[in-house]
Length: 168
Image (cartoon, rainbow, N blue to C red; front, side, top):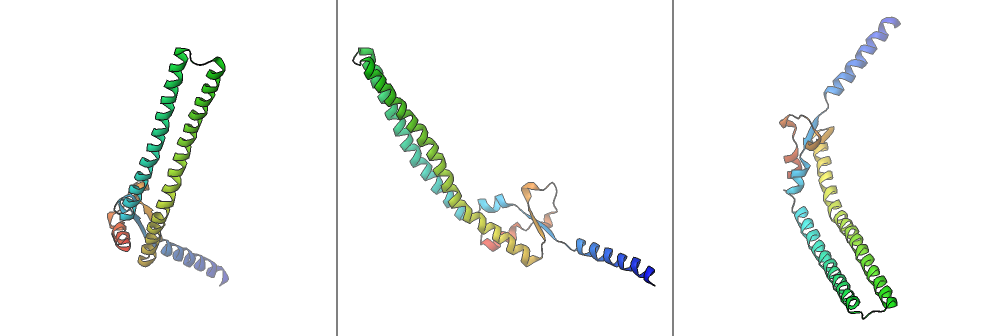
């Protein structure tokens, strides 16, 4: 009896595993499309563009000042108005201004990246929460992003459900 019970239990266990595997629901979303339709993303992009323009304007002003200072020193040197000691001092001053401009450019990139992260992180979290809510509400075990899929049945596209959850 024990010998026949073991194979029967094994078959039942395998059947239950097979049934549970076949009951899994998969879906996919087009997160790029969803994000592009969100007003919050458009506002964030506009804010980033405004900040970038402002920072670039200041950088351009610094560059123009450096170029003007360089031209002025060059003219003084050509006219012989600077002693060798003064030339060294002016060269050091121009080099320091050039380094300051380089540092400003690095700081500008860092500031833009930090602002981008601060503005976009809540938007991404909102979309991810909506995807998770749709998955739970509709019994999906897995939802993939369309950009990664090689093939997907269109009936499994849950993008419209996520959009509805986000109100877009």
